[in-house]
Each structure stands twice: as structure tokens, then as C-alpha cells.
Image (cartoon, rainbow, N blue to C red; front, side, top):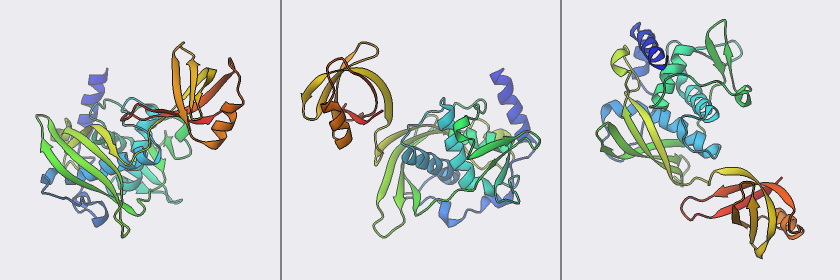
Length: 283
């Protein structure tokens, strides 16, 4: 079934539904500011990379093509900021973008190399993007890049495509690097079947390097005791005994009043580089 869907999408593209001369001229705000010569057919990839960088930075998430919420929030950033460049995308009377489903499919392929179909649209994003069955299109608000831009550099060729460095940089005078990722791209498997394709690569992975907070997770446990003023030992639901750091004043107050055996739930971060687990909030 998945292969059938892939062939069906390619057949749609062969009808020329995505090609337009308008897409060949990029506004300066989305052109990559290369720190070295980049392949010409990579220039438009700054758009999906920019969308993923903003999504990962602003929502404190990791690249995950299998997670419907990440999938659609990334697609929302991408379509909201770059979708208006597509000739099939129109603007409704109330200022929203009307994006045909087949356009959303094309953009999703650029974001996710493993793409084989649009994932279910999560209810949590219903305030930002909705599907209109009558139009077979998605309605969403246009995005705002704010005072930052994505810069591509340090590319190196691989067997399937390229590995490249991407930085989200402030456009203010300080030019602060807000986030930095290593991006792995491979050739877009559908590009040869698309009339005038815009995106010649699909993103396979994005690894955080600088500027990102550690992703947060939820857990439940039983309080064992305090090892010191900033370390608590707990037994997690799976029976694992684990030590967590804590620095927030409210968290500290709650933990210092607990007794052995007290059960509680909490939100914590996991720093991949140091292996440090830190409790951010107790529910």
C-alpha cells in the first residue's frame, strides 16, 4: 500500500502541478548566506532546513519523522513561511493560506527522506492548521521569520547526498547564533518525476550541536531521599533507581518537604553531552 501511495504521488507531480516560474526567484530573506560555495541545486533547501531549525528550537524538540506532532509542526513552519511561493497556494479572504494536499505532500518529502504519506493531523495543532475536505486542502496562517535567518555552510558530499552545517543566526547587530545543526540530506527520490522541481533533496536527519535546550520528558516515581542539596534519588515506575539534579527554587522546596515513599510526577531534561538528568517541574 505504501509503495502504491508513493507512485500515486509521483503521478500527480508528473501532471505539472508543482512547477512555476515564480519559484525560481527567491526573495533575499530566504536565500542561504553561504560561507563557501554550495551546489546550485541545494539553494532552496534553506527553506525546509529553516523550518526544521525553528521548530526544533522554539518547541524544544528533536528531529523525528515518525512523530505526528513534530511532522505537522515542521510542515506548518515550512508551509507558513515558504508555501506562498507555490502557484497552487492561494490566500483566503481572512488571510490564511489554502494549501492543496498535493502541495503539502511535496513539501513533506523535502522535510523527511523517509516520507511515504502524510501522518494524521494531531488535535493539538488544530488551532494552527485544519484540513478542508471540500477543497482537499489545508488552511493555515502565514508565518513570520522574525529577526533571524538560516545560514548554510561546510557541506561535504556523501554517497547519497550531502552533510551540511546549518545555523539559525540573529539578524541583529550581534549576529548571535541561536542554533546550530548538522543536516544530512539525500537526493529527492521524486525530483525526476516532478515538472520544474523546487527541492532536489530530502532531509534524512538533523543533529543538534549548539544553542538548543535539552528535550523535556515526563516521568513518575517514588521519593527515596536527598543525596545532597541539589540531588534527589527516586525509584521510577519501571523499578529503576535514578538520581536527578534540581536547581529550580520551587522544585527544591517541594522535594525538601517530601518523605520516603511519597509518589510524584515531574518533567525533566536529559543532557546528551553530560548525561545529566535535571528535574524542571514537579506536577
